Amino acid sequence: MLRIGLTGGIGAGKSALSATFAECGGVIVDGDVISREVVQPGTEGLASLVEAFGEDILQADGSLDRPALAAKAFADDEARKKLNGIVHPLVGKRREEIIASVPEDSVVVEDIPLLVESGMAPMFPLVVVVNADVELRVQRLTGQRGMPEDDARARIAAQADDDQRRAVADIWLDNSGSQEELVERARDVWNHRIVPFAHNVAERRVVRAPATVVPADPTWPDQARRIVARLSTACGHRALRVDHVGSTAVPEFDAKDVIDVQVTAESLAVADELAEDLLAAGYPGIPQIDRDEAKPGARSTVDEFDHSDDAALWHKRIHGSADPGRPTNVHIRVNGWPNQQFALLFVDWLAANPQERAGYLAVKGAAEEDAHGDTAAYADAKEPWFADAYRRAWEWADFAGWRP
Image (cartoon, rainbow, N blue to C red; front, side, top):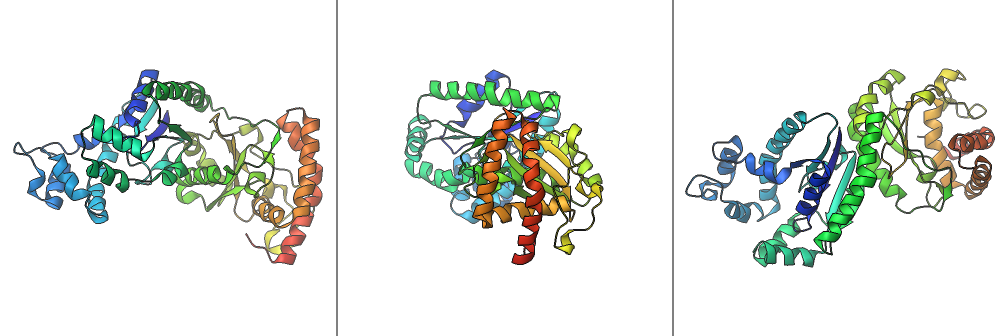
């Protein structure tokens, strides 16, 4: 099963996008529909709302008067938090019940209006955000829904802003044009991103990045933050730390377009326990290479970080992203082992030493030329450089007093 998080501000076009995904075969779990269900007459949710906001939020027949509730709940931040604190847990419980009932091979699209505000984005392998300009959204709300303009603007202001939504969006769909244009974009996303992603997860297949060095992408850090948050959520307390590592973690440094993330665990046994949770998050294991990692060079000059020459201390587990839109390597290494320490050191060392960055970039260029697109050949071609770089990096760490 692949779970997709879908969100967007009120009036942005989330319903149209959700309907298109449903036509494509997605199982839609609509947060708005569920939020109405959990406050029907006779429910625990409605009783809690009445207790919190008063009897005057009820209509004559005992059902919820939504405009009356909105007038109170959107009056200030505290009132809104009180509303969310009542409704969100009930919606979450009902959502999980629905998802548990669908076929295992489904693509579940969870339509959640307050996905950003509730902090739920890292729970999903992929987050889709639909957006439109504020003035256009106000126009839609007043024209199509008959909502008073002041009410429309208050509701928009009470939700996350564009920057907050962009921070969690793996896919950003602009809906400033016609509905037909949005449907066309949605179908393209479904067919070329979501369906291949779901297939790769089912087949436990990872996506490989081309062995091509590209100009530094200023969005790499933002992409990595989303991935780190997702992996931290998937691993929970079993991850001692989760870090963006590798070349894309070095500011303004040309690299292969793959995000490398290191998950630090207490042991390889704990790393193995994470396999199914990482698969559910969209990161299948790579069994053929997850048992060892060649030591790149001489012993560290910092004894605190160099526990042993034992080859076992270079073992790790590795997973990769199944998302065709974001190649990612997830390295699970043991806390304090040389490979775990060096991955952290490598980023800081390169960031602090322009001459080393220039040297490594030249090595990558030559490796790319020799590899002819073969990822394994590309990695092998760089290995001789790492042997001496390992020594130089630890010498710098000793001199600079670096600690992870």
